[in-house]
Image (tube, one colour):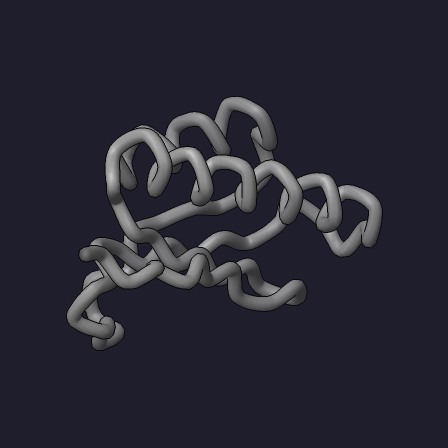
Length: 86
């Protein structure tokens, strides 16, 4: 799933650098950590990238129960709270 998201981001934002971070420790419930560098320092482009990645992270959770954390350099961290499952 993370590889698919990286591919989609790379196609939509060709200058963006995306990779799966396997070195940073993750919480037990986190399936993957994505590191993303925007293609430029342009605030509007970073905001567009941010909104796009939020949508992908939400869809990954809703459609496939995959919990992703995305760190966007210069913008922040996208973390989706995992609700308690009963």
